[in-house]
Image 1 (cartoon, rainbow, N blue to C red):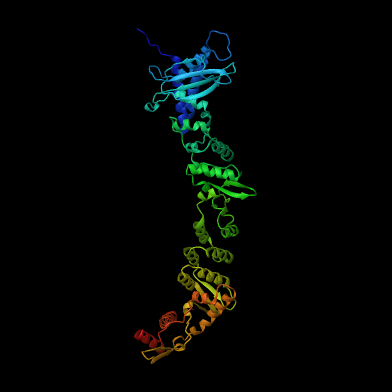
Image 2 (cartoon, rainbow, N blue to C red):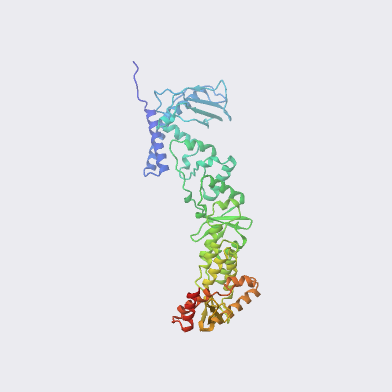
Length: 510
């Protein structure tokens, strides 16, 4: 009957490896005991390797490559690191090849050692054997279904991470599994670019499949934590490469963090300041010029690279709405510039600009406010819905005809006849001069003078201007009735005899 004996070295090998792997997990997840676990595990491994180093072996004749005994011991060492596999029969094997500089393939002298490993992962790596120029090629394969056992071999997985330079990247590793969709050349370029811009090291593209299937789920870095130490220069090609990479991972907040702006032949990328907004460099030239002139420190124009348009949030109509919201209507130059931009835009945007005003006053004596008047007339004429533009204009325009006298278009009576008749045979009449006793009949002259001036300045032809000022047709009896009521309410007076007669006649015969 065979006796079982505890393998002390195997216990220490595997136990320390488990501690190290738990430490790696703790490091990735930033547990409090991360440093203690890794330090303890490595200390135990160092002790075991130190003790096992003192071992006498038979000296055999040197060969050009590694000897079978040496290779077997390396295989045994990997088996011990893998550990925890005793008693489990799988189809796992280790294929070890040795040679000068290159692995030897399909050679009869290549030793083949069968070992049973529990849940080993497939990997091909090369290591130089101490004291020789030969290299080892170790091919570990396993047909067992590792997904059925969550306790994957700790030491072997750790060894894989060490070979792929992953452990040293625990803090700086920038792992984006979706970037596996990039071509090899693109991935290589984005790796260089991220190191240059953000000092982030990407794993080799060949390592991505392993990292994606790695038993310990690696955290996906938060793109929002990217930061630039200083302003960097980019070419158009590098900008397009960033766009391609960010599109794959649906990262659309790039310009919440950074700003791109032109600098000579190249373009600068820098951290975004709190009050800055990136706008697209492919906008209409008038919009870009307006932005540079009035908001150069807030609205930063990007390079005119088409792919950037997908990442910039403030663009097109939303940009125009932003400009309308920001406009200071008291700043004449800014208002005129924005109004000219909106002439080719939708009625809705023009309406929003009109709504920025309560009233616009034009002084006929010194022509103060003429620029505003002229600009608003041009804007009203450009409405697709002419009646809507006319109504908005009539609502906000005021004309100062004397020092203390200000009129609106509702104070203008556009009626050239002196008398209004009622009845089947016009047997009843009312004189207009008896209805409007505060000079309303003379207000038309001031408006006609304004229209003549606008026509002379080439704003529009006279016929179109008459429409905007609501003077295209003479006032009907209904219009006169409406303006009379407006006059009485404005002056807060009771109707006179003639006014009362007009009201009664209008209600009787209309």
